[in-house]
Amino acid sequence: DLMGMIQAFFEKLGLHEIRFKPTYNPYTEPSMEIFHWHHGLNKWVEIGNSGMFRPEMLRPMGFPEDVSCIAWGLSLERPTMILYGIDNIRDLFGHKVDLGMIKTNPICRLVK
Image (cartoon, rainbow, N blue to C red; front, side, top):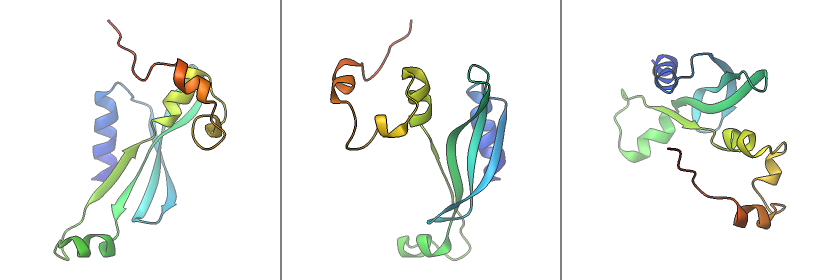
C-alpha cells in the first residue's frame, strides 16, 4: 500500500519514473528512499523517504495494536539544490551556509 500510494502521489505531480531503495530509518520498519529519474541531470535523484511506523512509535500515542501507519516525506532540499546549482548539501544547510545567498534569493518564486 505504501509504495502504491507514493507512486500515485508522484504520478499526479507528473513524475512517472519512480523507483524505491531499501534503507534504514530509526522510526520506521521497513523503510525506503524514493528516487526519480531527472532527465536534465541524467541520473536518479532522491525525492523522498518513507516507511511504516514501528509499533513502539504508535503505542504511546494511544493507537491500538492492530493499527499500522505509513510515514513519508519529500526531500525538498534536492530540488532546491538542482534549482540553485548547489552541489553540496552543506552549502544549503548547516553552520557553513552562505548567509548572503540566503538573504539575496527569494523564498518563493511565483510563476505565471
